[in-house]
Length: 186
Image 1 (cartoon, one colour):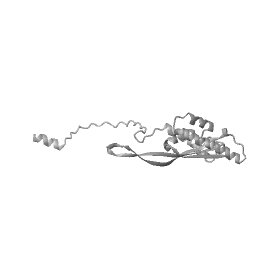
Image 2: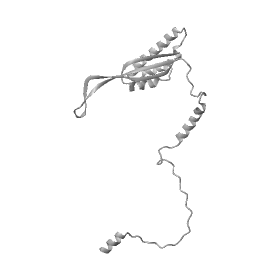
Image 3: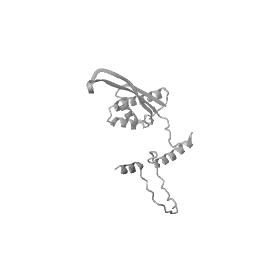
Image 4: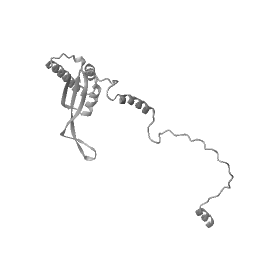
């Protein structure tokens, strides 16, 4: 059984609320409530309120379906934060070079879905089991390899060239014609 709760128009930016929601995603309800209770983030109180609402919704849905549900069996299946409207206030803040910035008040919408179904096992063999087995091998291989293009690629050692038969040749002098003409003129 699944239960959803959403809290809309919460004060604070969505980016800051996502930091809190990311901490509780996939956790048990009791563990998530403990994390929210002792978090120092301002958005944690609002997310906790939404979480308690989702627990109450799960109990209500179970009662209506005449099913017994234990709140301790619930876990956070999905949790996400959407950006809400931005209210342009009439106040302005001084900005560099004589300009002024309008103050903005950010809002966000939090949605939490709880479930008492079995959690998916990450090691389970199901559809695409070949892909699951191949990914760890690729991951281990990629961690050992260095990246960074041609500059970071390992260089091959040059093999010693076979010695050519020695021939005696007279050294030739090569001088540019410009230098030779300069010396003659001086």
